[in-house]
Length: 201
Image (tube, rainbow, N blue to C red; front, side, top):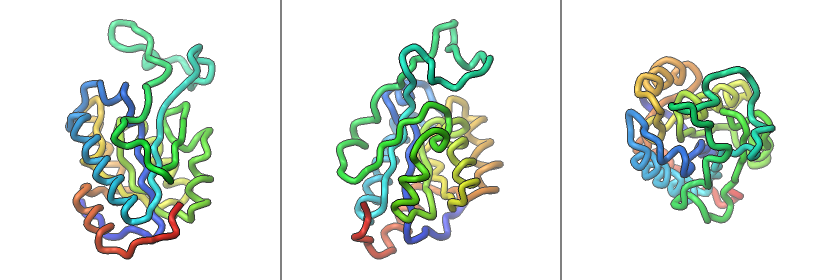
C-alpha cells in the first residue's frame, strides 16, 4: 500500500467520528488511536489550505428518516434499539473555521446530503477518507465517491471497524480497486511536500 499522488484540490472526509462510535469496541485499531490520527491528518489538511469535511450520522428521534428495510441491524446486542443520534463530532476535530459539516441519515455520506455540492464548489477532485466504521460508513461513502468520479485515497490507519475481519476485507479487497490505500504518515508526507493553497474555503 503506497499513496503516490494527491490532486491540487484534495479534501479530507472523516466519517462518523462521534461520541457513539468512539465509545464502541473497535478493531484492528482502538477508536482513540483512530481519532488521534484523524486529528493529525485534519491539521495537516488545514495547514495546506485544503478542505476538511466532518460527517456525522443523525436521524430523527422517532426514526422516521432512518434508512428503511427489514434487518436485524436495527437492533444492538441484547435487543436494545440503536440510538437515533450518535452524538456530536469529537471535540478535537471541531471548532475550526472553514471546515464543512455534513449530516447524513444513511451509511454513506453522499445519499441525501449536499456533500457532492460542497466538494464541487471547492473544486475538489480527490478525497482522502477515514473514520468509523471501515466496512460501513467509510466503504459506502467510498463506493459513491468512486461513482461520482472522485479520485480516492484511504487513510487505513485512521479508520477502524467493529470487526477486524471486516476492516481487512475492505482495505485489502475493495479499496485497492477504486483508490490508493496508505497511511497517515504517507499522506501527510505528500501534503508537506506541496505548496500551500491560500484559496481554500
